[in-house]
Length: 90
Image (cartoon, rainbow, N blue to C red; front, top):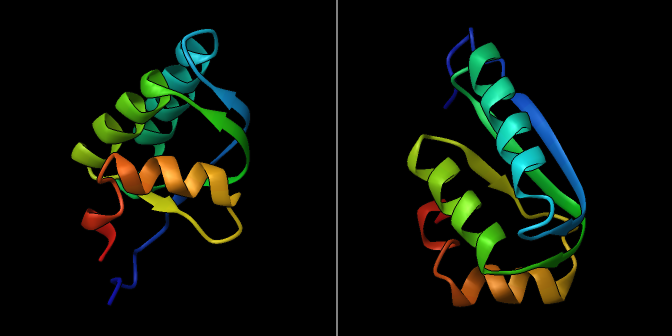
């Protein structure tokens, strides 16, 4: 159960998460991590994710971020599941 001072920052990603958008995603995640130790990555409006995007999410999870998978498109969820990124959420 979160503590009383639990105040997560939500990073809402949208569109494609790939090599072309990687720098922007890294910047947004770093900015969020400066604000709070609790970062939630909202994926409901992500339309495409490739191995670059999976790598960025894996790094963020390794630093303590969590993925908000509710409402994420099925094809995006499938890639995340195949990469094994849903296990840390269980």
